[in-house]
Length: 270
Length: 288
Image (cartoon, chains in turn orange, blue):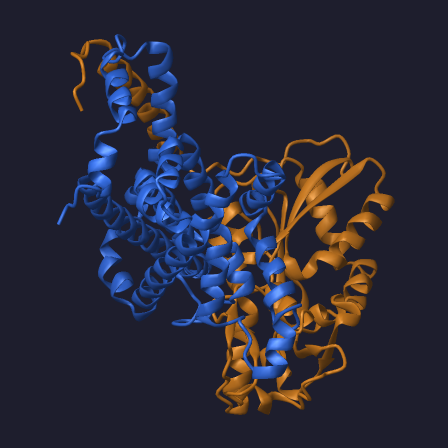
């Protein structure tokens, strides 16, 4: 490059100024302490206003229904949901995502949030058991857990790092079968999708997922599932702008009405 | 080795290159960057670089031995490098001819064709993965007869990883090469034709050398895109250590349990890809 003489004065100065500014901003952000828990301020009414609920993906259908019922019972309230992998949601909460309630699919993911001091004491509200999912009509003639150890079968499991995968590991240890999966999926909905599209012969997912997949997927129950029951904890968050409404929502989920909706979706008592 | 009619001699003596050369030295404003441009340029640069700085700063360097030495990380890195490289070879082999067809003057429906080619760019990669399922999955349009005939299905094999990467990376190469073709001077091809060269000879001896840098730039973009490919891969190929779990999938999974090691893995992927690109670039710059 044959660059013409550069006027060296202004360019580095400007860059330095910008860098300094950004540096300041960064250090300011970094030095900021964990936001202190706001004292529950006097909200006008306990059942008015809006809250955001972060919930495990497996709760999608049931919680959407519960949200509607809750809003109908509490005029002037608005519940917004964000569903996703419990671990991802936990990370978002620890990073300061504005939310009021967290419903996790495993005690471990809830622990990430409580350990960071971001949540109040959690309560277990439902439990979920594993079930074998096969494409509609069981075209590949799956009979039980034995088929999961058959190398020639196409099998999908959740990765051991996520709750449904951890539960699967427990089950296979219990029945002393070494599974031969073709894929270890990131979350239970991705695992279910592989079954629904007939790309695998069978998968281990939650009972609630088999129900939510409707007529695309059939479920096969197995007794050993009782050895790996997954308990869902739920907590209000300390950063909540509307702690009264957050608590009201949590209470509603634990109430008979809320539990009935969850039972219909396939969840069991904790 | 250089014969009188070899490409470098021909290209080197063209009026076009001389014209470009003159233009470059004529810029009176070349040395000075007006603050009006410098400020947004600095913002853009910082916006790109700072997240990387954050990655490097926050990565738990004390665990570096354990994470990078783990079998999973090296397996994933190896798989990523192999699949991305194979993907780019395929992309170049099928993408350059497509770009050539698209850049032909007077091609009817060229704008529609270009819109079709940019689809993978705007499509969320996960949707791309689902789309691949519908065609090449075990129950797909082509995949089903293939599976019934041979018992072979693409999903959950390294071939599926490559297919997903080719799908998302191909547009980068095609658009880049097409741009190079349009910017190149077509008169040399015409001259060669009138002198009796067959179309294949014209393509090989005139067109390819003219657009070499364009192909190289497109291939680099495509390789980078293939290496970072995540959504279509996790959907269409699944995730299994050693067969389909590439580095981006390994990083995403690590985020579930150990964010620190996810940061380290990201830095490793970043470091290796920057090193490869820098090495290749040096080689290309010296050649072209």
